[in-house]
Picture 1 (cartoon, helix red, strand yellow):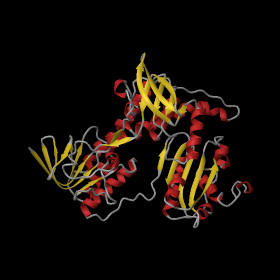
Picture 2 (tube, rainbow, N blue to C red; picture 1 turned 90 degrees about the vertical axis):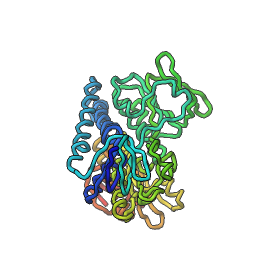
Picture 3 (cartoon, rainbow, N blue to C red; picture 1 turned 180 degrees about the vertical axis):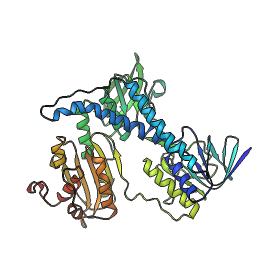
Picture 4 (cartoon, one colour; picture 1 turned 120 degrees about the vertical axis):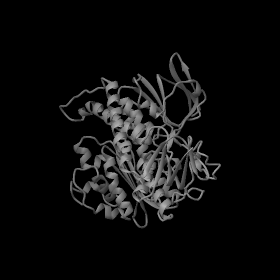
Length: 467
């Protein structure tokens, strides 16, 4: 048996795992990094990178249709070679995986990368025929697509997001089950590539978002030809004459939907199986996630967890943040806290949804008396000049103090403005202070200033740059 000795054992070689391993190595610790599957984890291989490059390609195709917003311009663009686009996407993934993960390990001689599945033991972990002994452990095994319990699903072919992003051919029609950020992004992308898409969900589009945003985005999707059906109960799925038939109920009325392919986009599930967690007394929380405290500690002393496996903020940047905090606490004595006081979130739909802080509903549930402003994009000069007024900005503020509690932007290019709102939240700015801040004219982010001013002013009384 091969035995490895390390100051820190990191189980999982995705974003959180690499962040933890690099953080520890930079502090002079010896690290064994155990990875199962493709190095780099979800984001670079099957998530952020491949999806966002295809989203941009779909936006380019849609630009031909959108050109008619301007007088005297007509255009037509179409996807003519999916295989070539798919190959280009895969080449980008391979290049980034090599540059940001595989080659990166050579710069850190204190990190030993060990492929295989790990199972925890009292000494550390077994990885195949090897034993890793470590003083501290960080678990960063990530997540995978969740599968809903729809009767008949086992008997029909279906795709998760990973398979959908790498289809060899595109179908003529597709049913997308799930209207969270994955379902929304992929439904619009494939629709813009010419696939007839029906998007179905139990509640509504982006159910955690502000209802005004959900309603607006639903309308924009329908204007693009995407069929959106919400408030459904899934009854059964079956295969009929080579097509997928999904039986649903809506307000007690049965309905059957049919398409060539079925895409399941119903969230993600933490990878906690076969790690020996129960044997080690490591507690699990909701949906099988590893329960951790603010310092990323599990219920077992010396064992930490970070990233998607904890069920917290399943964003790659928060996974990296959590991995760094876990490693530092493992080596420095639990001095650091995971900061989720202002976490930005972006849905790369078109228009984009960018949010930070509390929604109105969450604030009220917490017993906070709030006031809100709602600014349609047709009040924003940038949107008027671009002839694209799809969207809105909603701000949530504490009623008594005026302190900003949440910002929610639905706008083309909206994601690039959310960091401004995040900084305002972190600094405890009031909406009055935000409204008095100088913003550059004819930018989308100026909508934040206008939305802040609209709490107590009639914007129709201002000239373009006044205020």
